[in-house]
Image (cartoon, rainbow, N blue to C red; front, side, top):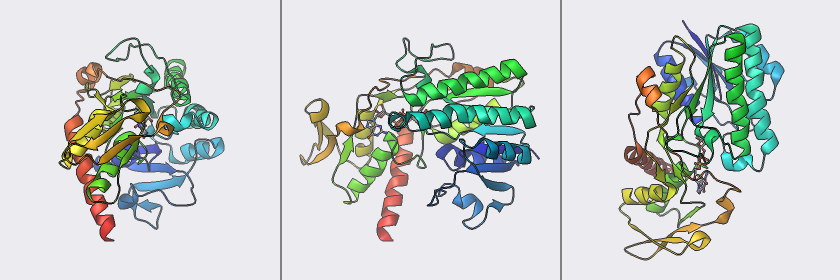
Length: 347
Ligand code: GDR
């Protein structure tokens, strides 16, 4: 039986990856951070509330900032595969917490690589790299060959982790690779990322629980895929003959504004826009009711304007294809949020 170790196991991707690996017959070890209130809703259904192990799924307390603890865990588990998903993953918040973001995202990755190198150097290592590495790039679509131009503390720290992963591969011959994943979403997405914030708020507006959506930069464009498709790519990357870095993207780019329009369309509401910049508003085209306002507090000091990926290499070499694209993704997230809001309103 293969053993996998997942950092950030209670995040969106971690929870889908656990499901995939258990289905494939792995023994799965996950690292969770100690917090005063539990934040394990995504993995609760997999292991139960009051235990740290069920069947082949075991949880351990750990933290990317605690080197000794990481070393002990790696030595204890001696995994065949390591999926390093833990990070301070919010780009906007990294401007307020640059040092913490760097400690966790950059040095945390180094600590883990060192532990693997010392205790189980034949383990296969997956690094959660990101399209944010490209920043506002000079070309589009973005490929594995595009020059990196990170423009947030989050992305600069992730660039360090990217190169450390390459470095351990080159220096020690470790099977270490980067998945350069573009935005990927699902009903399990954290509520302060833009997709989930929009679908959840629109669902609450539909059920009369909220008046309007307050949003930042609506002109940003992203290549949004579906998280379960993307964890499949992570697993595929660790099953190859050699460790290679891949871009994982849908090849479609849409604006935040389109995402808002599509989400409202899902509940039968057409949006009419007026004004500009921070004064822009979106109203219900039928009633004139204000449904969307801009709040500059959600603007970032510098943003990535547009992102579009080309995953041809993954398609050709891994046989990976995204099953779900933008339209379907918005439908899945809207339906899930409508159901969740209805349920919580009843309770
Ligand atoms: P991103 O995702 O920064 O691309 O990083 P996010 O959903 O946070 O932002 C996408 C775009 O939407 C704009 N935006 C807002 N964003 C948030 N969070 N909240 C708002 O109210 C809002 N209004 C407008 C943002 O300015 C931005 O342009 C995600 C994360 O998962 C990273 O960890 C990952 O590396 C990349 O995707 C790929």
